[in-house]
Length: 232
Image 1 (cartoon, rainbow, N blue to C red):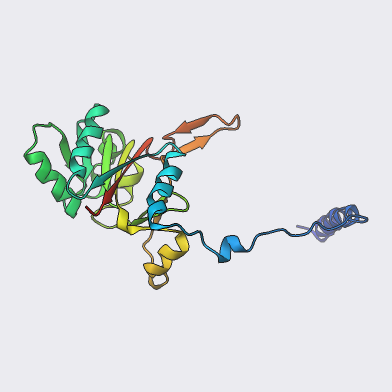
Image 2 (cartoon, rainbow, N blue to C red):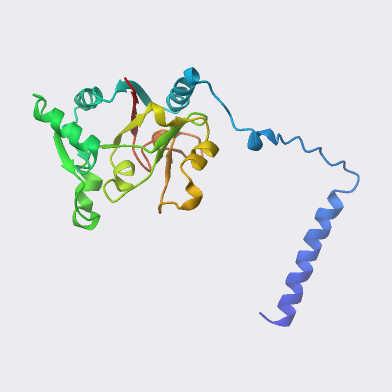
């Protein structure tokens, strides 16, 4: 840019700033009514209210939640798949819940086929993105205040398992739900190290265009089912 061009740009900038300053003359500053307690006093819930709060927040944004147990959840998974006409489920055979579901299906007349995430994505990208209708993953825990699941991707359960299939089923231990994000991070000592992606999932994928028409599934799962496993 020439020196003359630089001077013109600077003059234009000064004129704009001058107009902005002039527009404030004779006005009264608005008092800052920001509530500092929103940051310094995290939301708290009683033991009886924590899970209902999480369910309320998830269901308010089109998520589905069900209470189950550590022994009974495989039957709930099968019921959800059959109800949707889905005959195939993506799981990780290296996880405890993947093995538990496989054992349950082995003694069940249901014809659900388990698909293993056991190879690099480059080898089966087309099948994963276009021919995998549902997936099952575990979670690291949940956050009651925002109705969020915390997913910590691992080599056994990569993040694509929860992001790509249209129907995502997530297992959440009731004992691992915390009041707020602040407590969750401190309890798990996130300051000592984070994964490449820690995922906070607060419902199925949704987006809206300029006309505010809400659509689900544009950037991730269209449906989310959270099975909350009580300690019984």
